[in-house]
Length: 132
Image 1: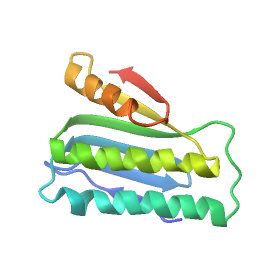
Image 2: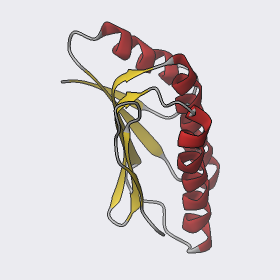
Image 3: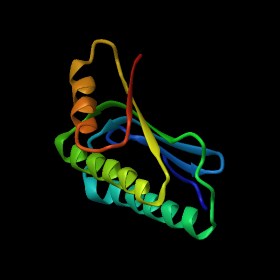
C-alpha cells in the first residue's frame, strides 16, 4: 500500500501514513483554508488501509497500531476532522485490529491536553498522553 505523506505548511500539519514501515503521525499546526480538502485524503487512506489489511489477510499484530498526534495548534474546523479520524481508527476494532493514540502536548499547553482528553472520552481507542 502506498504511503501518504503531506508536507507541513504554515497552515497545515505534516502527515505521514505508511504501512511499511508502519507509521501514523500528524504533527504541527492545523488551520488549513479548506479543511475538508486537506483531511479527506487522510480519512480515505485509513479506509483503504483497513481494506488492505483484510484483503491481504494481514494478521492482527500482538500490540496495537500507534497513531501519533503532535499538534501545536488546531482550529475548531480541524477538530471535527480529527474526530472523524479517531472514529475511523475506532472502526478497526470490528475487524480485530486495534489502534492506540499517543497524544502529545507541550507541558504548559493545558488546552491541547484537555482537547485530547475530550477526544478520548468519545471513542474506545486507548489514549496515552505524553508531555513534551
